[in-house]
Length: 576
Image 1 (cartoon, helix red, strand yellow):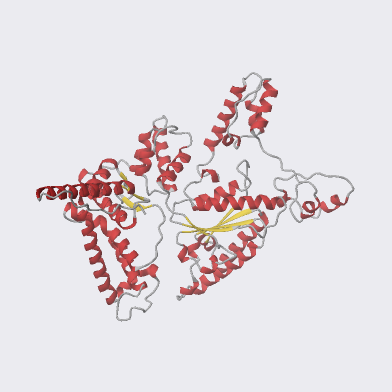
Image 2 (tube, rainbow, N blue to C red):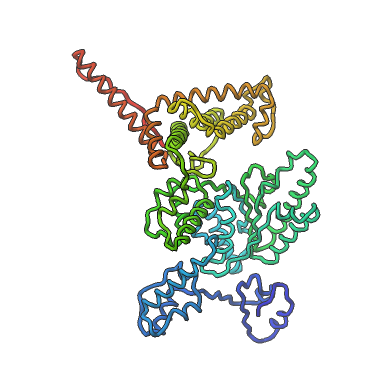
């Protein structure tokens, strides 16, 4: 019996004084409620496991085997594969090798985005939520309550970090990674609904997708581009009525689907601050998980997942360091490019293929590379001096128009004080100042840094009430802080702030000129640099200075006939 829920055809069957068996890929969803209520026993048939494979090999070949098929291979195998691989004319070892080959063939044919949660890296908090949600789903399928399930999460992070990929992996893994199907994934977005036509068409498309989710439970609704459902409080133009209607209707649908058992909600946004607060309240997307760029360790795992069977055993750590700052989507693109080169030459992928796919084969002069190295070293050095070495990475990898980058991968607490703002402005200006310190003048490569420093200065001055005759006056949304420049008082104050940040940044770099040069040289020679290396250079420089000072003290004491000398203690650089 395999009927949809709500079917009346099963009621007479339950009334017979005879036992009956109902088969379904998902009893809680496909079987009628009356059958689920009447069932005294629920048996879930497992897929292939190592013990079943071993018993089959022994029964067919007559020989016991101690060789096991890896669990990740069993996930891709079925009964038909077992029949094809296990033959009486093969040894047990040959049977296992054939099963591995069949599994590898299926795995290679699997779409590059067909990943399970165990293959998702760089988003530990999101995977933690998914683990609890999957456990709750399993309990619900065994007859447990749904009201305690945490079935909604909002993923916030820049484009390319894998928010949509996570939703796909969650749906695929929801019934266990040994499941062949997972649960359905329904993808929705503001623009997909808007493409249907006018407001009424938009609302009809939205309601149709949520109705489909209720009918397909258990399933996942992926609501992409949630930042397009903007905060209604700030809407004042002629389109405000349209957006208000869209957000209100979405909230109604979210409330309705939350009451429907078996439906998970995953929202995605590049900027969670822009999302209407009503979507984030308790009972809707109350769990907000921020996803940042992967650290080098996680990025290497992402590359390994994408490479699959290529470059096994090869050391890709150096390439990963030059790829610091890339997203999972960037890594996927690089691996595809490397495979494309190897395929054209009818050979396997080589390390050089991957390296060129990451760094590019661009003809950049040594003069321009040295300027880029000095620029990024300046950013990284001031970042370490102001905020510590943890998570700081810099490279000279060319991507698009960008010749290099420096960033902090680990998320940092931002208290929003004037001191915090000013330190961040100094980090932004450090690349430009480093070019002036080492090369005499800055280049146009610092334009974006200067633009962001200006915007941040406006946000600080306007948001903290630090400028103008009436500093407590609210000037507008800090996310559009550059609009504050239309006020003369803000323009004057921004000029003063930037000049002061430039001065203090120059003092920092001049005082640590030796370290700046050493860091730039490492970037020039290797193409990548970590904050820990800069911290070590700073520590070595301070220790050398302390030794010189101590030697001078001993020399002065000896010259004056005194015994001993003065000990000068230099503070140790903290990575925090």
